[in-house]
Structures are given as structure tokens and as C-alpha cells.
Image (cartoon, rainbow, N blue to C red):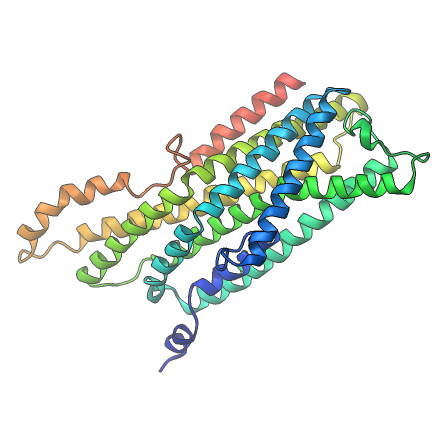
Amino acid sequence: MNSKNKVFGDTEIKNILKPINILFRVSCLDLNQASRKFWTILLILYNIVCAVILISKLLCLKPNFYWGKVTKIGLQMAQLLLWWIIRVRRKNIQTLIRKLESLKAGLDFRDYKKLMVLSKLTVYGVLIVIFLKPSVRIWNSIRKPDLKKICLLLQVNATLEIKHKINFVFFEFFSSYVETCITYATVIFYSMFCVTFALCLKFKMRSRSQTHRIYLKTLQIFEKFEETFSIMVFIVFAVLLLRIFRNLVAAVFVYNKFNTLPLNDSTVQIMLDVFLAFAIVFSAESIQNNANVLRQSLFSCSNSPYNFSFLSAQYVKISEDRKRLRLTAWNTFVVRKSLLLTLAGWIFTYVVILL
């Protein structure tokens, strides 16, 4: 038995995606054991924390109205909606992983090892960002408080008691945690699933029967994947765009005032959100391209005069399947590279207007 067969006899593709479940667990979700009492308790606590933060931000609007707070409230509500959609569809996600297992024979051993390393490194990096980013923001807020951005109930200055500072730290940390964690988890899972799926379909010499069998499985996975993640991708893009536009306002304001591009929390968040958008688009592009290459290979296998009459009845169907081999965001737009050009145009126009 060669090394490749030995590896895939002992391991499964789900091991590539398994580290990402850590990010969902940090968000109080467990894709594997969501029915346990422990996770039910975490579910209640998570939603209580979200409700407290949301109510606090709504109360903050009354004495000190600030548009940044309105967008933060919208972001949190979108995150909570995304959280519940994932929880409701966790069984669909597990079904997708099992379906992808049926294509693991097409995954090269070297690609498998690279994906394992990439999955772990990505999770470690995201965990660092999740906990480091709010810490930096808290430090900056305590050092130089901005009364427009900090609720009057939680103003931080040297005269306040230590308990108020502790309350502020917890409020800011959990607020940042709720706003970012579930988005990062969703994007990383979506991207890693697409990349793994694409590598399983990478062009290899196959017989027509093997190609057709893999193609049928690919169609099934695409349909289930689109059904499960389409609305999630729409929410994620809405969140990313809202955050980018919101932070651009802060960055342009500092630039106009001090004639220098700030390297602060807003700028870092813009770069992170742009990176997440690129991750979604390029990973979705890779699987759509490889799936279409697989579809087209069915035609190249059909030159034999012995099976032409049999295949001719399938030509129209296979040609029309191109529409089924695409990933969208709730059927509003296709997740392709051209989307990045559209987003870049929006952002450029927005910056010009602000300047």
C-alpha cells in the first residue's frame, strides 16, 4: 500500500475542516454536538450577552447620538442573525462535509497536508486577531477617550472608579467579540470548504464513467452548498461592506484633519475586511472553475462513435448545468472575481465623495 492510500485510509477530509470548529465553539456554537446541555447553556448566555450589548447601545443613542453607533447596532444585529442561521443549518453543514468525503480520492496527498497546515494556521491567526484587536481598542479608548464613540454611561477617565473601568473593558471586549467572531468563522469555513472541494476536482486522467460519477456528486454538493451558504454569504458581504464604509469615514476624517493616513483600529479593520472579501471570492472562483472544467471534460470524453448516440441526448442537459455550477449570495450576485471590481468601484467612489 502506497503512502497516499495509507493516509486516506486513516484520515478524512473532515479533519481539514475540524480545526475551524474551534472558531464556532468560541462563538458558542458546536457543529458536532450542538444538542448537549452545555452548549444549550452557552447558547442562552451568548444571546443574553448580545441582548445586553444591544440594549446598552440603544440607550447610548438617546443622550449622545452618533451615526457610528447606529452602524454598530446594525452590525451586531446582522451578526446575531448569521449566528442563528448557522445554528439552524448545522446539520446541513455536516451533510456537506460527508458528501465531500465521497470525493476525497481525488485529493492529492501533498495538497491534503498543505490544507491541514493552512487550516490550523488560519485558525490560530484568527484567534489572535479576535482577542488582540479589542485589547488594542480598549487600551486606546482608555488612554484617549472619545466621548462621541464611548457611551456616556461608560465614559473612561482618571476620575472614574476602577469598577467603571472594568465594566467598560468587558463591554468593549464582548462587543468586539460579537461583531467579529462569527463572521471570521463563517468566512474561514466557506473558503476552506471551497478550496478543498476545488482540489478534489483538480484535473486528472479519468475514464468517462468515473468523470460522470464525480460530476453527478459535484452537482449534488453544489446544490446543497448553495442552499446552505447562499444567504450567509449575502449577510457576510453586507457586514463587510458596512464595516468598510464605516471605517473609511473615520480614516478619511483623520486624513483630512492631520494630513496623514492613520494606522489605527479603523485602518486595520478595513484591511482585515478586504482580506476576508478576497478569501471568499477567490475560493469560490476556484471551485466554480474546476467544476466547469470537469463538466467540459465530459464532452472531450465523447469522441467515440460507439457512445455518441447515447451522449448526444445528454449534451443539452450538461450544457445547461453551467447555471447550476455557480455560487451566489442569496441569488443577488454571483461570487466571482468580477465582483471585486464592482466593490472596488463602490469603495473608490465613496472615498472620492468623502474627500
